[in-house]
Length: 243
Image (cartoon, rainbow, N blue to C red; front, top):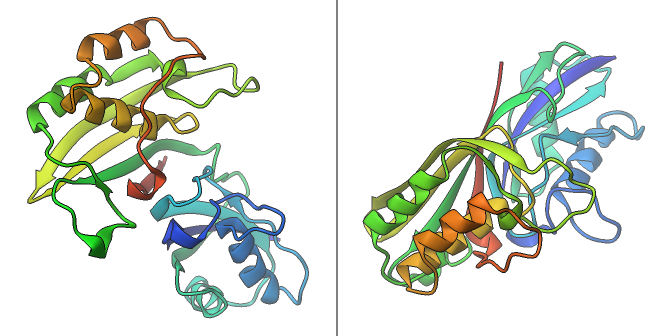
């Protein structure tokens, strides 16, 4: 049995997230169905680097699967894409050693969140229309997030998650025309964490929140914190790095 690493992109608008769900369309489910067809109908499990929520997009989601095949990696990629719908596409497939794990071997994850200051209906499923934003205020808040912190206050409550400490390597806002993108990378992320952070920083620009409150929530993590949450459709999983 050979192990393959798969990198894919998808438009999350019509998916109920990455994770396989009963009677709901998921990215994992469609990939498994597409690859299983190439395995004479015998189920092939696809393990992702992590879950993305309903509506969240990806350019560099990584997964792995085990299968015996005579196809080389390029023809295997083409065959999988031939079985997929147009809102999911496999960028690459490569043969890896049995020790590779899409989730546990990852050392860095990178997300981009896109905000638009002037409404444009053509990209409404890709960006969050926020109105005018102050890039200086956004970056003053973003700098606070770098380094190792307990992000319990900025995550969806989950009693099964005991470790809520993450190490953030990059936290920066960049403006291109009327689009303002938030770039964040770290060793791991909690459920809804990026959306809570973006929502809080945008709220600072809107006068609904303050940097002092942001600092307080980081210094005093708690599971019952009430935070602003950005919508899912502005979020993109951009890249996963491995050793």
